[in-house]
Amino acid sequence: MVDDLLLLIISSPSGAGKTTLTRDLLVQFPDLTFSVSHTTRKPRANEQDGKDYHFIDRARFDALVAADAFVEWAEVHGNCYGTSAEEIERAKRDQRRGIVFDIDYQGARQIKAVRPDAVSVFVLPPSMDALKERLRGRASDDEATIERRFSNARREIEHYGLFDYVLVNDQLEQAKLRIRSIVVAERVRRPRMARQAEALLRQNRTLG
Image (cartoon, rainbow, N blue to C red; front, side, top):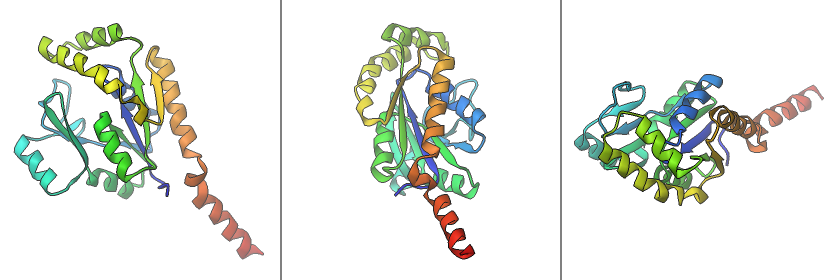
């Protein structure tokens, strides 16, 4: 069964651009909402608690895992990340048409296991050299962190086969158009339009 609420998963190796593409989608489609993950990672200078992530300590994270509060969680780059079931319920309460998850392949696999109707997109860098250059250009991570993220990138790319769509973020504006087109196409898939079609048929029977 396909839910009216579009669950859109966006994943990529660190530095490939999933956060930039996610932010663009939220501007272009105001009826989408962002799933704010919980993390044990320390916030970067430009990040806000409750907006970019829910920043919590490991003890609190482990307590949420024990309470089965997450629909997915994983340890990535030495830190824990998780998506709470409450995020999906919040999107429904706010009558949003979709919710966007900025998560890694491990989280994508877990969400797809319980929600096969979720739509997943994997973002590739144009090259490994370009990826390393982007990681260095952040100026927010130390050298050890950059090297760890880069070394993990190949392992993450190996899991591209888990995803429904794969796009290369070579030209940013083109990549934005491609991912916007995915949202537009998924919204008019027959299972998501079934409710509207059936409503029209009921009207026709009433008029007849």
